[in-house]
Length: 269
Length: 305
Image (tube, rainbow over all chains, first blue to last red; front, side, top):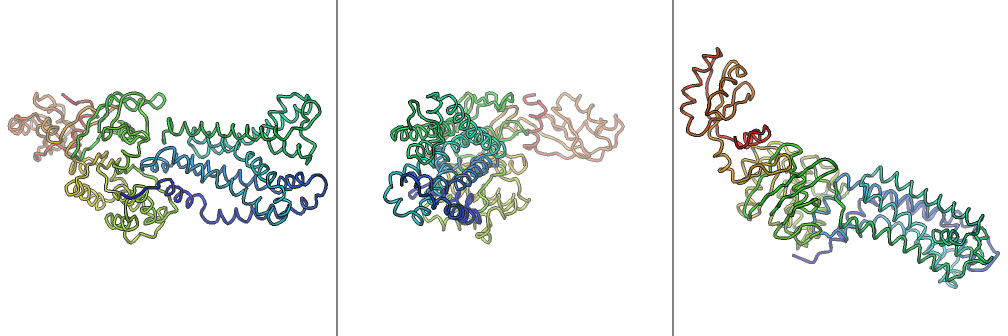
């Protein structure tokens, strides 16, 4: 027998299934169209620090891109994973000599990480075209900003993935995914409101933990709407990094839970 | 392959209730049983797709759960197996060949397509194949890595009679020439009986009977097809005969199972019995017991009578 790369083979099949014509073409159009269309407003911003401008422009130009990415992830998880379980394709893959961890990783890459990479590519192309000097000068801010943008996508995606692995039904997974996505939004808004009204430290931390990009925007003075830290100050940079790491840790915990369930308990019926 | 005291529940439904089964090497082994007997659950546990609630399963001496080493030695064919729909057949088989580490995967894919009669459909997308063609493709993907054992759940489903015959011939050929073992679950009993050398009869989540076909059929003695004008009227009287194991109506005839050694006695009695009951006697045909008889007896709870 020759050398085996089962993960790559299943990934190749999976990509042909999930990203067949015209999905990549449509995505390419949308990912280019929205940042470039909305960018002129952002590019006219002149006030504030350069870092603040960069972050604000990234944030504004990525709004619809993040939304489209979430829709794509939702579709991939519901119809590329949960529905495949129901129809029996996951069962077929599991009869091949492939470890369950490998199959999970393949689904993670094709369902979530590739759409997430679209966000990075879209913002990367946008900043390279419109703000090359600013982006190069503040590369660290650009990278942290991108990670914060991705955190907004990866956390709800982790919840959706966990739900899909457990419920194993395309329609139910889609409904639960949408509900979780909205629930996260509602929790975020509630935390913002309560934080603004009460100034409770833990609520403010929880809000920034769920919205690390917001913490960065407030830190660099790009917006003044976020809850103010106790003592009347803004979050420190190390706070922003801690929120970002915390957010990724939460996402990682959900991905790990989904992986453990898939490896130890998941039955494709 | 060995299953010991397997129990599997789906909610309140007990799918397997202490199933114990051993399949030695060198066999074409049939799993038969009515719908819901637990055949598919057994196969899924053997393949490591399901985990039993209790009990133990060993395939090639190892636990099959998340065990690629074991699965690399097995070819799998599920009932209504789902395959990726947007990939072309040859391309799909080449991917599968690479997953198994088969050298020259494209060449092997073409050979597998030829083997199952799909050579001309090499560039068709899997989703565009008919049910029968898809079943053939499933067979191809199960065989292309030359497995030691093929586990097939309803492999004859979706095939026309000619296709079934071809698949059965292929199974027999692979077993004889390549030494491939098979575990096959099927409802198409006459055809299963044609190729299996051993069977296990599963009912209500347990193995009720297992052995070689010869051993099992020997328990049946002889059965007769009695052609009369009113089989319903004759049946109760026939069942009163002490050496008759069972009698049931099949089409327009009465099928009677007679204990071994009483065939001549039955021959001598049946005509006069029909006369006594007042039904017209047309003829009598001796027949060898089949898997269907075994199956029927198991479902009606008459095993071991």
